[in-house]
Image (tube, each protein chain N blue to C red):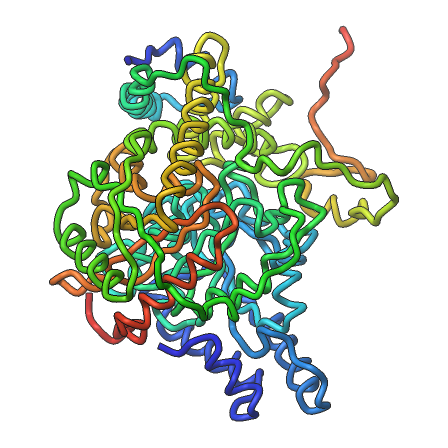
Length: 99
Length: 484
């Protein structure tokens, strides 16, 4: 299966990665090769086979009691934030005032 | 090679203080790791502090933990509170873990000396450790070769005698293949046996933490400590801990080993002849060999790379440059923070997999790829289940070759095909061990893999232990003085 440039563009938007022009060609080639390989699944007889979501049949709807526990403090959390201000994560303005 | 239990014995008997153990190992690592590249960081201060506490505990005759005095390295995709977790990625170069992984807590409660964090393929995606954003790791047996991956740093650290035990994570063979390439024991427990809390997720339904060790006993010891139910991981099995060490003893009489011969027709030397010799040795131990048919195995790579990349693409969506990790300096808008940070922060292979995973989940292709992959996974589970009605364990080689030279594979697909024998255990959630089965003519270690039914971890280790003892090679270790 060949992977077109427009398909790569669409995927790049879906996974929120801005691809550099120098890597596009290589990524397209890689993906085309892998897709051709995994297309072997088309030959499998899978009619009526249930899809597997989980390999442990004994675990279902694992719930625990709702109880108060210690959580990460704001200070600790912000230690890893790339930018923060006034105890909050800083990001560029999302909504701008009209001129 | 010194075993973990030998370290513990020296400490418990008072032949060596914990501080002396840590100092000696750290200075050995500093002397030799520059040519291997096993570590991304050393936990010097932490290890010495723990060692002092441990020495005091011993002086005061307080009870000592199961891992007392044993230096242990940890793959750098598991969190130790207050230490950096990079995942081998530029994205997390400065990420300081705010909590301990459950395995870290359990090991420290048993008095382990955590000495460093080891190199890996970025986010554990790779089979050679060449995809680390920082540096490749070299195989201590042959510095031209890869130690395997993605837990290549952990395997190299144990093979180089930097520490007798290390933790790896295994999504498609990332503990077992490096163990085979470095002449070690590598064990992937039953899915759900060891808590994944604090392991940075790659393929959540496939990932499992396990030990890399010099011998089966040491691996059993570490599994005994780590194999506990954890309420912070919803896939952790609600089972009491098992006594894996004690269960290594026991008769093998009447046990049957299944070999899926039709899947192995393309095996080449040295793996082919070594695998046959290993089977011969199992027979000498009183085990009988039978042929089993598991036709779905030929689709392992296709199914694995559909499901693991789909899971990876969703797991790695959290790396958005907002809350932690790298934020592109070039970004002016919120959208650019996402798009540019992810381009700058992720390496080639991670991008390959996020793109592939997003593709197989995308509208129009999901039915043809992701759903088919999930259906095929059901066949893996069913075909293994029916094979295990005929035999107790299944034997396979761990990898199609001995350690390959760094730079051997030029496309991702060529590298993916190296995982042909290891991915089935992850797809079916089975326990599987790789252990040293001999050497190639150019003195590279080779590995035998044994797989068991879910929750038969102890049985897998018991047969492995008997094999190891009969082979009598587990004291072998490479010379670090040798020139590449």
